[in-house]
Length: 334
Ligand code: SF4
Image (cartoon, rainbow, N blue to C red; front, side, top):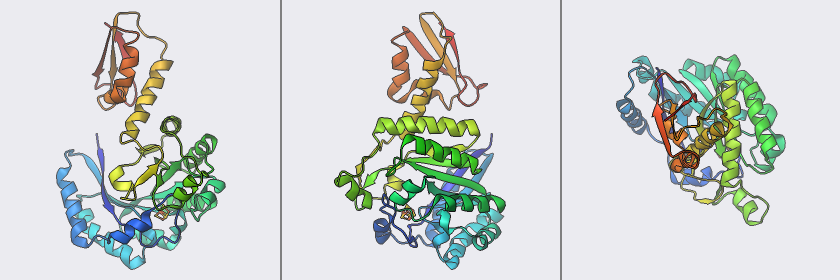
């Protein structure tokens, strides 16, 4: 099976015209400089050496800011660093993340010539009130138009979403996910909105005008969104934030952060599957078979699902079956 690897190269945002209410990137970029060519080559080489799968698809991923907001000369500078790795086939493509209002035909044609294969847009919400109250500086129409243009130019499209922004609710988040699917996205990322220090959201929060999602709400929403995307064939690349990457040293003030957020969501999906399963054996114990990839999620974060099953059975075992795929499972009595 082909394994997909991204080599993340973080470029602090230098060209952002707006300050989204939840973002502290400006403060961060004041402390960091853009990495130079040698630093980027080191990151690429280090990552390439760490990959174990022979059959792999590798992309160099320029993350951390709005790539296409940089002057064309800067974009060309970074993309040039990646070219030798594309030519020697150690890397199969480049991915960039950017804002929906930084996409136009000229930029896309340029990116196409440079080996960029995937473009991720920070859509965040597809509700105009949420976008406006979050200070995003673009509209739903901008996201849809940019998505169409990206697909027309033959790129793979990622649309990232954020849940729990000001004025958001579960219906709007579900509608956002459905519009991401309808827009033809191949992949997505789901980030819960957090309140960071030195942001406009911090002021709203301190004034009592913004209440972040609770951790259980964020998990519940993410369960539903993951299942919706999964049903539609949109790959969810990430659920939740990595503290080291996205909290950016700005400091978390409030919100549904958990270091194992994805594990909480995946455990809850398995818990739901077990609750809905109707053919539990009447034996003393059970063996639950899953893929090796899903096994820990099936057991649950801090064994939550196993503990619940131990209320019903004296013995509960989990085993991997290499014949299974995705979230398939079967249960034997023992
Ligand atoms: S979230 Fe992105 S677009 Fe918004 S201010 Fe931060 S870097 Fe700029």
